Length: 579
Image (cartoon, rainbow, N blue to C red; front, top):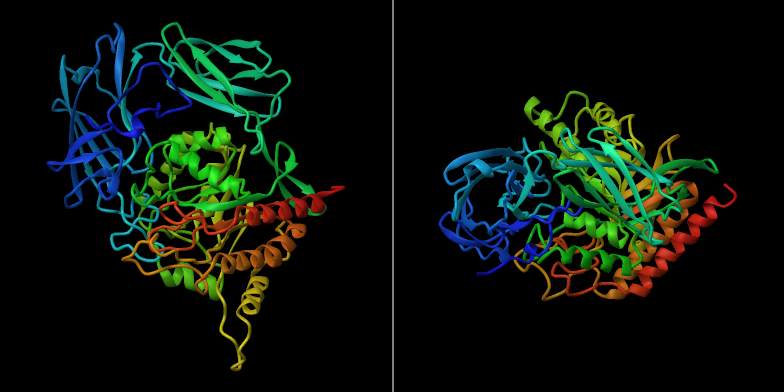
């Protein structure tokens, strides 16, 4: 039987049990073979058939002997199913779930039989904009990509005790220890943390009551030294493995500017936009290790940050960032309507201001978006790599942004919230966000100016003079320079990028150098705390990645990009010295 590469690793790294039975691999979809967890639109799924609005999956499984001890129950987990899922086990309905980006589970113990069991999933995906949908489009073009339907994250089973099971862990770290809150029903628990000196730190706690754990000689987590503390939590009937890191994300006024700080020290978010698309897997790489490969590709180029763009990944991605040392700015997944004139043309060329009170479509859409944002924070808040959240991007589906900031900030006061990325800023935000792309205005009065001069003039006209009081300045999207590599593109798609096509590696490096040297570096003394270059890799028709879509060709030299990172480090050190 064919087995998925996703079957090797426990899908939930921060709450592991010995009990794990993967269900990815050979399924049928609408009567045809498919390999999960890849979506049917992906080449890796092997699916050869139409993908309509209704997707009916089936598979069968037989649990190993002694998989379910006396007094235990079996939970069925789904990483994500887009957009609405209904699930049956042996013909018995066990759950219904809405939304395509977050995990869900159900107790299926009562529906199980001895021997073979039949699992059926009905997914309905109309690409409704009442649900979060990201960059998916029924007619892919430009910055809109192939839609992803149905099951697209791991499916698995585990046996847990019916009483005293650890259901969730909430971690709040700082520079000297961590506060742990465990939900284990009515059970008490014991906690153990192996320390680097060979000693064991232990404590006992009660379910639902925060437990403060001071860590001697704390080893702080940074991108350069991403130290993780392993941790086990045990009740009378259950035992899980987890981990935490010690780090803080704060701001500080230094030399007249609000600076973002990691562990109390100024940090520059030198990053790239990461949309999480792969040529043969669409929403998924070949296996969990694929995330680590992308992270190390970017670290090799000198970057320390990924902006995870309007997509929530499997936890394997965040675990890879935790252990390899990559900061993450996590976007919420947009819902609602996008309009090119209103959301792109006007803010780019006319005005970045717009009142967003009361807009944004129907009440059901708004309620689901807010619930989804809160669930996203709860789902990912334990990962030390995540340093901030983006609520709205470039006006897509934006409404009542000040109110939503006030809704979400208490759910995670330990990180920053970028309420609006790019434009249409209102009042409430921790960030002053700017987007500046490679757009050259035409030469005036028939003058034939050098292209680079026009681009530089445009850049300078859009760079702020300084950050707003109490908010740190963040260039949360820029660049996007296009370089097409023949033999490594989506051949049936028109190229999409910003500015004239770069023909060579040198041409692309010159454009990048111009942007950083003349726009980014001079802005650091004026309060700039981060810059997100678009983007990690090409995506379908977009050819503005630092790597090709298939990850086979790197378009720039590592030494050149590491030189840029070094200049940023020097500029930050100079800007904050004596501050």
